[in-house]
Amino acid sequence: MIRFNLSQDLAKDLANLPITPELHAPERAQNNNIYNDPQQDIYLSQPIEPDNEGAMIWYAHEVILAGQKCVIAMEYSSRYAMVFCGLRAADFNNFQMIFTQRLWREACVITQLDAPLPEEDIAIITGLALELSQQQNFYVQANHNVQEHIYKVKELLESWVLEEGYPLPIEDDDALHFDLVANEMLHKCQGGEDYFVPIDEYRNFWLGFVRHVQGIYAQDLPYTDESSLEEVFDPFEQDLKTPNDQVKQAEKSDKVIHVDFINKHKL
Image 1 (cartoon, helix red, strand yellow):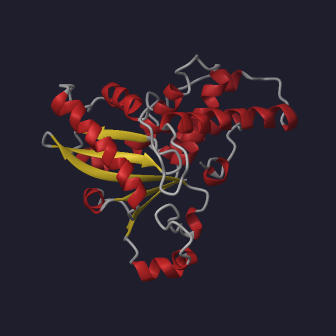
Image 2 (cartoon, helix red, strand yellow):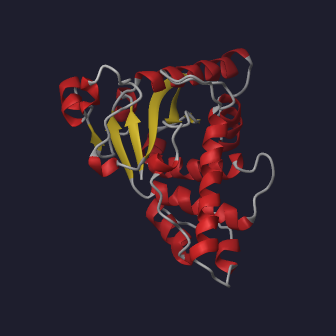
């Protein structure tokens, strides 16, 4: 499951999706007593409704650059950012599919920056990305600390286009190029002691999950026919139109294992 926390502007452009409005401070306090604890950082501990426990959390803000609408999405735990630029009404209507496609492809790219992965490892990453994307919930909610990190990415994007002369990264390859650069920036969470690099944190999650699954296979799920895992497919080139279709295809080998994203990946 993926939970999106949207800015107000982006929520308006995604009005075709079922979006839960932002809770006001008293309501948030009732849902999560962390707001009554002065020792806790309210910006790093957002309330999560019970049906979203274990979700992969992304914050997404809309910005205007060179007269074009862009979305900066940032994964909560790693602060990994993905940019979507030059979006039109049709793109907002298909945002769930566009995001699913980028989530899957970008995970496969960043995990192979140092060396190519075996095909069965790519299949595991693909299966997880498609499983997470099968259910996407949308809320209007802000987080001050994440917003500061998104603003850093926005500043870099403005410099990238307006000062350095790169084209607005509308195409997937250009967006990926920018993402790789942006996620090398050092970040530090409010209340944290150490700086970290988002791309390292994000890559470590995906590779850690691969090792986790491999360990389960080795200990509990011996099998002799590996052909289904070795077949790497592009769900977006096989006319699988919805995340649910993609998950069904990935689960044909019964090798997709459900994951609690929050418990598996924390800074």
